[in-house]
Length: 564
Image 1 (cartoon, one colour):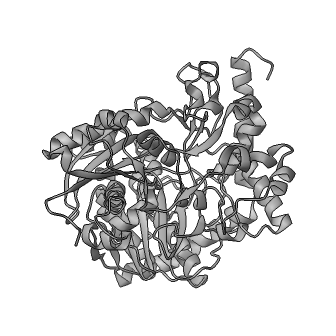
Image 2 (cartoon, one colour):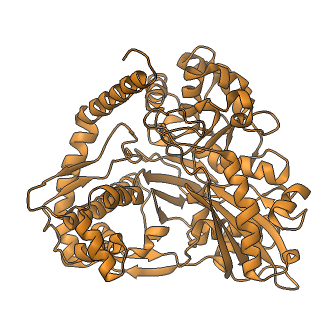
Image 3 (tube, helix red, strand yellow):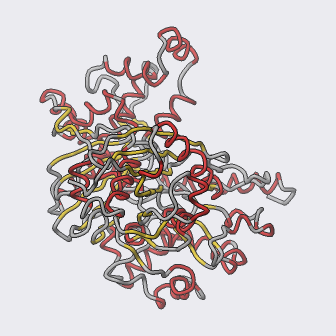
């Protein structure tokens, strides 16, 4: 039990892709008293900067000031809704999407706030789904493989274009002036803690998973110099910083940050964390063999183990990456809820939207109900859900979505169900990769916004052939941050103990149906055939993406008044 003489509270703040969410949580039992959400005024900039300057394809940027607005809007609103005395709050913790990077000056000022760089795309936040650095990632991987760099197998043999080094190398090669002006290349998870405490602390989770920090070292200067002349000083000049363990106290809330948030100055602020990994304690998944899939716009799969091994295509394994004392593994799917949203927004006839309005339901719910009436395999489709590339196990953002089996009889609900199944098949590929590497998944737990889709949950259980546990909080990342805040404040001795008291999960909420599972086993063979052909053997998707980029660049040149 926590050490307390009266009820105490903590605040967890989850910075997502489009908004930030603050949750007030009771320390003794994890009860969530109130939540408040603040949207980012600039959202995701994937077409233009605020100035109107056009962005190339595959870019995704944000404005750092939007994050500070969450602190001044959502946190006070959550406190007011909870009806508690702010003096009873003992700690604050935050989590962030990753890898989301900010180029800053030595005082933490983002470069986009420097007037001379306000119209330079590389001066802005590069969001996790900024995928334009694939060419740099390819070179990072090729050189590391040639040199047999010891850290490469820790990431399943591939470094992602989403991560710190690929995005930094892209900046170095495309806008050297911005790169040279940058004093530090900072994870957003650490930058927001810097704003709260006045001190820059680099969290061990992001450094390990996104920053290629293994066994106390980053990639060597000679490797980086071989990658690009002059880039050998990147770690020393822009990246290296002291690390802090998850659940530790990064500092104390400053007077200025107390004014923003309405919280007492001096309370504990926990080390920054990644939104997926921080969810594991909220789902009571801090022991070996428990895999948590945080299913939202994308899906991140995390699990802890007492074994260190190499899983092909995993995103990484980091000592203490989820909880101290265990190896934390990560894998993922780049597009999930984003793909369902794209389909509903662009591929469904108006008659379906009319029917949904008549029934008083969302178009998603309407399509889900229609899809639920189908027998397994009735649609005759196989789908690859690579609309945002493939994170695991192929680690290639040049891949793209595919539908096989379309006929004139194919309906929107057929395609919608096939998309749901593609998510489940992609998850099964990941689970089997861990199993084959000797890290078996003994309990599969789902968290995130897609929990509300009961059909998707049942399909996942049937495709995996195993029960699904579910987290019973709607705010898993924010609750996970609150758990870390309680540990940083000294209310619990460690994250595992706080998770037992404050976490939420229902064990085996979904059970696989044997008949459907057998049919899905047959469909999975077809899925793997298409998966391996287009993902491993064929270069077609990569050529198509390259052709699209070339055409868009030519069109932009014409628009800018240059020759194509």
